Amino acid sequence: MGGGKNGEKATTPTVPVNSTNIINPTNMSNDTKDWMDRFVGAAEQGWDIFYCYGSEAGDWQLQRIDEPEEGEPIFEDDHKAWEFVYKQFLVGDVLAKNALTFLSIFCREEFLRIKKHCEETVVRDGLYNPV
Image (cartoon, rainbow, N blue to C red):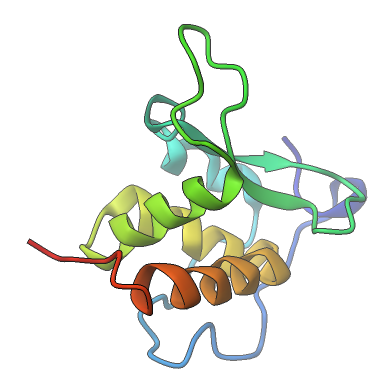
């Protein structure tokens, strides 16, 4: 997987990542290749970050694994995968934090879609119940 469009390096956004500053991309690499090893284990959980060059939804997207090597998909759809990752992030899971940080840097529109969706479903509807 390459960097930004046409192999260019992506750049860190200059706007705050989110209102609570939970994710802070300061001093993070702005080359996507440096991030790929931070998602090891995502596929086993039923999701991953995919490069979707030219997609209207953004070049990088967090999606469920539609066709796992064995068995059926873990998640019903991409939104369920988003909710899982967001809940994991809220309880401090490093893999989830890496994924959302990556999206906040390289595909802000996807990050904001996930954040908005999960704030409306996971938090508002009480689906987030920390143990």
